[in-house]
Length: 319
Image 1: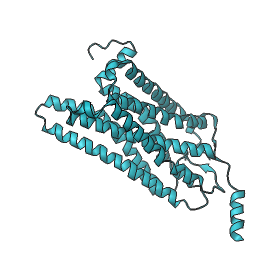
Image 2: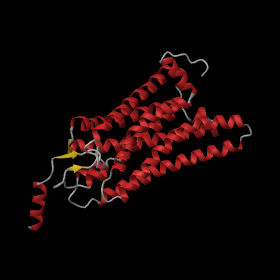
Image 3: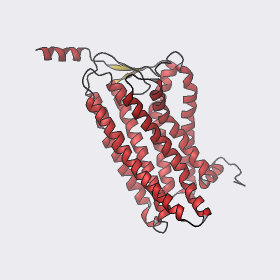
Image 4: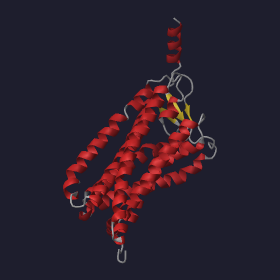
């Protein structure tokens, strides 16, 4: 009878919405962050749309490497758009309320896009490995069919493996607190408010982060280790420099992407209370890469730069 009464009380006081408080510790002046965040979001959308337009218009860019870059642009825009409108609504209009279904949906889409982006990085690393280490076999290995199959596999992987995250979060009982010290509906931030045991949520979050991301990072590390090993054996300094230059931009983005994930995981695991740094890193991790990716690739890739000049109708002589 006591169990029935407890269950009845939990059901009676179950919350119907969450309140996203924003950035912890700076609620009084957090609205000032809206300007740089809005500019980053606008930059992300503009830069990624430009990348897609350039790839579509330039026949010379219709190659597997640029197809993967185009897919990455779509994923980046999806990730940024999943979080930024709500964050700006919180900062500008104090629209902090979010229904439980909307919160769990946002949680799922964020996880899905992050895992998908990690998978695309793996595909791009494999593409660079084959192009540099197996150049004669590249046309027969990395074909349009390979791009389609790899994209479908990564899309299925990201959509299926992340389903348990919102499903398990939705199964928790939220019967007292409903204020989330965050701008996003993160798994750990939401389940921290539950009245029952959330151990399984934390375990699956760690499993997803370290198994999925860890395996991706391992494959990327292996690919670039093999590339570096080959480059160091090249007798021509010019050839070695050219080979490394094609990978430098990719490595910069990968290091930023995975470093922030590791930092967020460690701070979430170590911190007993929610602090500003992991929340800010979490937000920036979802908006800086979408803004940074196309800029780095455009700066490091001659074909993309020339395509950008044509799209913007600029003089590309001397570049």
